[in-house]
Amino acid sequence: MTGVGTAAQAAHPPEGEGAASTRWQRAVGLLLAGYLAAQRAARGLVRGVHTRWRRSLQLRVVASTLLISALVTTVLGFFLVQQVLTGLLEAKRTAALNDHKAGLTAAINALQDSEQSTDPDARLAQITEELSNSSGTTGLYEVVILPDVGGLSGYATVDEASVPRRLRDDVGQSLELEQQYVTYTEIIRGDTREPGLAVGARMSHAYELYYLFPLDHEQQMLDLVQNTVFFVGSALILLLAGTAYVVTRQVVNPVRLAAGSAERLAAGDLTERMKVRGEDDLARLAMSFNDMAGNLQEKIHELEELSKVQRQFVSDVSHELRTPLTTIRMAGDLLYEDRDELDPTMGRSVELLQSQLERFEELLADLLEISRHDAGAATLALESGDIRDAVMRAVGDAEQIAERRGIKVVLRLPADPCLAEFDARRINRILRNLVVNAIEHSEGKDVIVTAAGDRDAVAVAVRDFGVGLKEGEEHLCFDRFWRADPARARTTGGTGLGLSIAKEDALLHGGWLQAWGMPGKGSQFRLSLPRSAGRELRGSPLPLAPPEMAIGRPRPGFAAVLDPARSGGTATTTGEAP
Image (cartoon, rainbow, N blue to C red; front, side):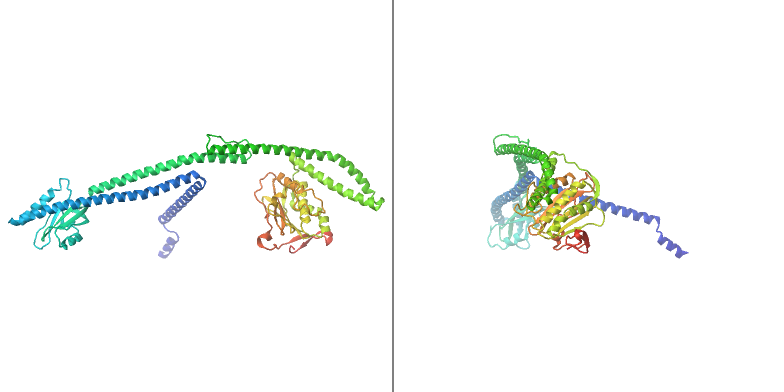
């Protein structure tokens, strides 16, 4: 029974021990939480001070002035106190030697007169009292007469231990009477000690005379000087800091106002102007800024008017050209249908006419689309769809161009659907434009089209290994009528508006259309779209730069290859991307 009870107690400790353990754990937890909270608060304070220091010119100037003035004041105050201390001690030393010299002469004369006396000890006591009385009621010095020969008595107004041993040795070893020696000591009065100056000399072959001068007056003077220097130095430091604050405020405030005005002007507020006060340099800065802002506003207004006129002209011309183009198109279609009945020369001319009419229609369609975007009339017909289907349609539309050039289009599509809300017509136009451009500039090498999706977005990247883009052209390529090489022979036509329209369509979806390129390494264009219309796009499932540029070699994986040389241009599956 005892063993069972012990085991039960071991398995279930007493209630008091469990409560104590719980309280201990709770206390440790509270201490740890408090430590972590204090650590976070300290880090936050340090970060705040560091941020304030980096951003505030006025704080740095005032702090630097405060630090430098404190350093200079400390150094000057130290040297000033040292000079005062040296002067006080030197004056005290000179006065002490003079007083001791006078007392020594009087003591020697009195001692010579006492040789006829029958009681020399009484005469020494009288000499000590007379010398002590000469110090006055303020106790200018204390008198100590010590024997240099054994068996004689000494006389002192303070403890004889106040005379330092090294001074007694110097006086005792002196062969000349009245040779004075000086040193610093502590004057002992009962249980109290105070700093003092000791002066000693031999007044006969049997006795030595010592004067002990308290340095309390000099200490008071030194304390007064130190306190004065401290308070004056502190006031001077604060005055310099205040002066630096006021001066820098007069300079920094106009600079801050100028920075704020520049930020508002850069944000698009062309009516922003600075207030001009006075005729100093800051006033001239304000006037120059206002002149610059006025000229900039005028130039931007002129450019806006010119842009409006240009857009209106493009829109009007595009609409006006539709009617004659329709008539010419109808006549061209009739001729094209009967081209077999014409002689070969006329038939070839009709075919050329038909192809140029198609290019003219494409150009006119692009101009009309640009006009819609400029007018803000472009709208979206949103529907849920799989971005993989849009990629397949775009690649299928470019199949004939790839076949003529003998180029393989490699598709890297995920196995799972990549659903998103988008305008199928506009997205198909973007992807078709990217694929055709990649084929046009691939220099006969393969083109890789990759699609991917995550929780918030879908993306398509089109990669070629052709001439690539030079630095800065990754932004210029989306400008209207811009071409990387105007002298390049082009078999697919091109208006220079395709990428610009694609950029506008991507922005209309709330997405991104971005470019990457490197001379001789090719280029990559990436389209990123949010899965839900109206949601802000925060990232893309695909990198802008191709993976092989980061790791130095192509990334293996499964891919669908659109090879015009086999299977009639249909998509086939390979084990690894070429």
